[in-house]
Amino acid sequence: MALKDKSLFRQAAPVGGKWIEATAGPGLDVVNPATGAVLGRVPQLGAGEAREAIEAAKRAMEPWSERTAKERSGLLRRWFELIMANKDDLAEILTLEQGKPLTEAAGEITYGASFVEWFAEETRRIYGDIIPGHQKDKRILVMKQPIGVVAAITPWNFPNAMITRKVAPALGAGCGVVLKPASQTPFSAIALAVLAERAGIPLELFSVITGPAREIGGEMTANSLVRKVTFTGSTEIGAELMRQSAATIKKMGLELGGNAPFVVFDDADLDAAVEGTLISKFRNNGQTCVCANRIYVQDSVFEAYSAKLCKAIAELKVGDGMEPGVVLGPLIDKAAVEKVEEHIADARSLGANLMLGGARHERGGTFFQPTVLTDVTADMLIAREETFGPVAPLFRFTDEADVIRQANDTEFGLASYFYASDLSRVFRVAEALEYGMVGVNTGLISTAEAPFGGVKASGLGREGSRYGMEEFLELKYVCLSV
Ligand SMILES: NC(=O)c1ccc[n+]([C@@H]2O[C@H](COP(=O)([O-])OP(=O)(O)OC[C@H]3O[C@@H](n4cnc5c(N)ncnc54)[C@H](O)[C@@H]3O)[C@@H](O)[C@H]2O)c1
Ligand SMILES: O=C[C@H](O)CS(=O)(=O)O
Image 1: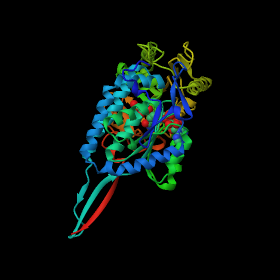
Image 2: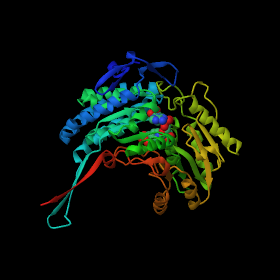
Image 3: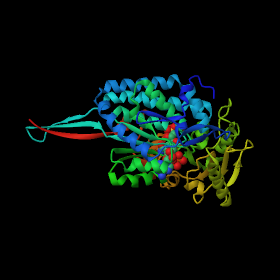
């Protein structure tokens, strides 16, 4: 690791304002998915440390929320500036623990920082209301106040941005945060805490609890001081956390799984559609919640589109994310490879044809060939489950109504995409798709300015945009008799 600032790679975790070193007790190894080498160790913490962090956050919240919005905004702005100033080091740490190519990791750092920048601004615009009274002597005030201690649990696929997308608005709202990052990628979270402390944000407000997920999550969901659980991860775990939180009536933010349709109509710009497919399907090696998971192509353009797509995919370089020119890094672990292989084998057993790839890459380990399947049908696992890997399954369709029905035929509802030129069709299809987000003639929709989130089994709530701040606020109605 060739960091400019070696203090950003810290084998310790901040708990309730104190750093606990990995050497102080049992630790957890973190492995580079590209090489299998141990990168470092983090402390193995548990319910006790989670409780300590929650109580410290509660204590620190009072003085923090009493600071002016301008003060909190300024500290978030400073945090943003430090993240951007250390982008290269943060990107290298991210690539080494998660595997994505360095250029993509740098893109994630910039994207993650944009949430801190955005919510530094939103912090100063948490407006309430004064509503005309219902009686002559009554005045109605609506105040917005911090919801309380926030527990955040995040996944390994975006180990920087999924954290800032939660922590920045929570701190801006005046809350304290206790974070459990994914065990595969804790160092990105720890580096963010190092920079938050350096920016002047009280460390008691932002703890990072590394260790067994179920134990730590159990404390987070049971502790009544926690008033908001914000989770990004699989639908299965999200549902479990929702059940666990019910006893203490916590507000839930759930950013869960997806099964995005990507539809290419006969009036699409095919070159643009191929470009959109590459970014929507192969970003992070297909390991994003908003990846195209089913690609529907209208009959009359199927051959032209699929030929262009395969030509473009064949040029994607597979390798260690630290190598220049690499576009597809390793999958996160062996289980991820096995899931991709299961989806390919199942599809082929049910009649799908292999147009490109289909096997583990010659690099070995968890590297996999980018793959294209044709003649895919709705009865295949790849149509019903999130693949989370570099496999593009192509479906044919005839008419618009039929493809909308197929696109909506899933319990998920996170992202969806389609390419078309006719304006009437654009509005008809965008309005008919049952998803939280729709990309029209683009395969990349995620940005801090927009509300990110899904419907149905893809979750609750939104992150980013002005809506993302509301998730960490409670409304208080004050009825004044004057
Ligand atoms: N909607 C979104 O914004 C979004 C973003 C990224 C990933 N995801 C989804 O996340 C999944 C992939 O990420 P993953 O494999 O890390 O998901 P995961 O659900 O296995 O793990 C997510 C986080 O939850 C923790 N966790 C696991 N079991 C837990 C438990 N019983 N109690 C408390 N915490 C627990 C993990 O340690 C990790 O930190 C995919 O389904 C993907 O679609 C969604
Ligand atoms: O995996 C899903 C994340 O939300 C990725 S992104 O926000 O689309 O970059």
